[in-house]
Length: 338
Length: 267
Image (tube, each protein chain N blue to C red):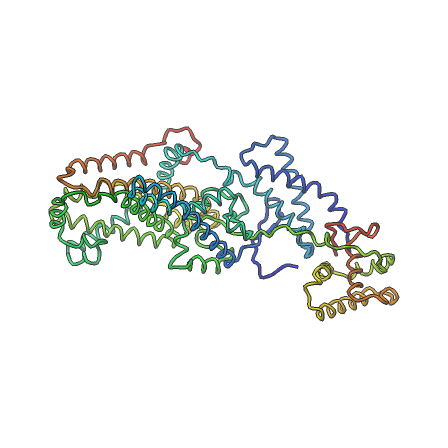
């Protein structure tokens, strides 16, 4: 049977044009609140266009018309079923920092604890390796100045005359920030290797940290060690762990153990948390970069170790308070998931 | 006509209506990325000039600012534009590509962030090898960042005029008055053949002269045979003109012979 659809198209074209106009208006002003009548009209137009598309499905010809109708239905479908899209987000920085970020951290505490456990395992491995075989330092230590005797380094640092970083503190801070953020984002991204890459990175970081700590403790230099590491490390190391937390969140979604949802749906559901944790880790690394460049590199007699350790501990306390308690009482629907 | 080599993502609405998005090929995406890379380089060279001016106050500060600034610009460019332009950067806009949620829903800000933060992994070990291979083998042409963010990159061809809008009716068409012949033509012509013939008429200039003569000769022979067209209706008419007359009676409204913009022959 041959049917000329020109009459059908002539009848429907005004509805399609109206739907296109409504969608274009919504696109131009994403924050616009539709009235009940407008919502009903949009729903009606969408259903009508869907029905028209269904009637045309299966025809091989007139691709442009079908494409146009498909695009209209797709746009209306996204508008009706999608909730708030990318352009409708009103970013509230203070709310994000004081409520969303700490809550997201707490909501995914399991992933953080796993990252901590992997780091602890790495630290034990690195510490034992250096304690048993000092020659392992050549392989483990990330920088040449850490390979030598800690006592010699401490003596050298404490006898340093003048400010070695004078004139390039900001450059050093910038390099630290950029490098550490890139490494942390890679740790996060490696969560897509089902977490294997993230585990390796976090474990290796733990190995280096454990080796340094044991090396300096065995050399009898705990004051220098903690005075040097704590002011920036108390933020920098947790920042990388926050990145790893996000990576393990991705890995958990990929594995989807005990979750009947499809992989795309699972990953989509954690995208907000992953982005939030990435932002939190980046902020922490900006602070850590400043501290490392402007504070950590100065030792006694320029800065007393007690003061440096005290500041480091204070930072750590604030960090624990921030992630542990901030944002708990804010009236927000997110509280239900906290 | 559809190009079977183009991969598509099909989505079915809760109302049971399917629609599809043609996926962007890895090659097109690479081209868009190259354009974006050039844009970032150009933008950074302009911004770095301003940063160097800060060096008049403090060289150290300007160098530190430059290090962090480049990271912010290179990562922030794609995030900011894809967020603001609904899934498009400048490169994607030029090549008619768009990032979308893989379920056809609106792109969320966090999805934009995640897919761009995972670029370092896609870029490993160099030249976007991980991302390129993943996109090539993935059913939805997704690089790792797209899989993590549950996004796809689709090709949005610019809206073209519908084929029939370009079909000009002839002043004289010997078939138009022969309703029984028209009925037989419609009855024995499948939609696929009807639209293929329409495409041939509209795209006649794209054929080599010899191929065109041969194509229209075969089509005319076919239509004459299936509709038992009396010889006098096609006497003195070139095969191509005869085929054009067939297309007109198949697609245009007989009472007016005016192009019905979206008229469609349906079997």
